[in-house]
Image 1 (tube, one colour):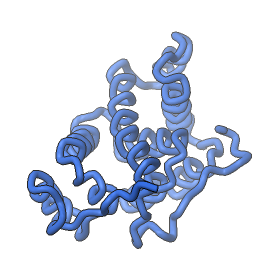
Image 2: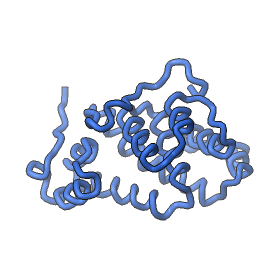
Image 3: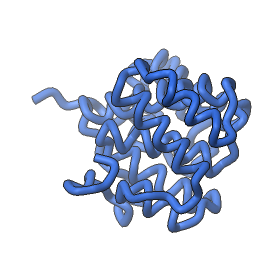
Image 4: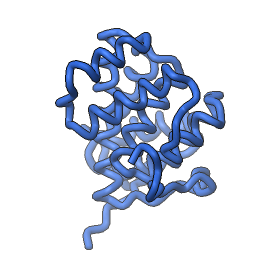
Length: 190
């Protein structure tokens, strides 16, 4: 079995150190995902840049961003990202019922958020080959073509972390332990 190193500031490649230092200042610690990403300064930098773009430049609000990220992570069955984004979402003020629905795969009461989740799920499941009527349904829910493209940005960001977590078997950070997650076997979105 291949074991991936969970880097520290001392063990990380030189080009990753400034990025990890910034993460440590931002989060108070270096999340295990970023510590594993550090093996590849390019991957670490790309993920951090995509995250910043997704958080600061998309037309989505905080709740919608978490719906995108958690829905993609749900479809990709990434326990690490589901736990981490559950904590982030709650800290950002996303309603507990929304977080629970995303984690459980149950219907979201807000029709617009449900349409967003449905669209993200379709894009992930069909690897982008969504039907015109699925795009039209998403647009009819109040989203725009900009949102369509920014869903792809969020999914791309999660692809980097979800796949890394699968391959590296990233250990869940202590602050996320209480929110550990596995995909429900009989959820409505399965």
